[in-house]
Amino acid sequence: MGNHTLKLEAPWAEVREMLLEINPELTKEDLDLEADGEDAMLNRLAQKLNKDVPAVKAWIESVSHNRGLAY
Image (cartoon, rainbow, N blue to C red; front, side, top):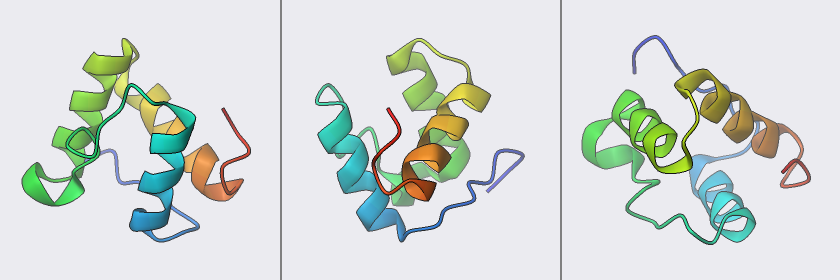
């Protein structure tokens, strides 16, 4: 997992489902952590969401820490 290791309060499967609910334009493939690893997923999301990787990482961690309350 490289320089952008996620610090999650909930299991990834739960966080992934929250992210899919919050942002319907995301797909399970976009959030596939197993295929290429965390850095590849964060880069893929950054490109799709037109944000930088630190912003995507912060968003995911915020959703995890707030159990879906942060958008």
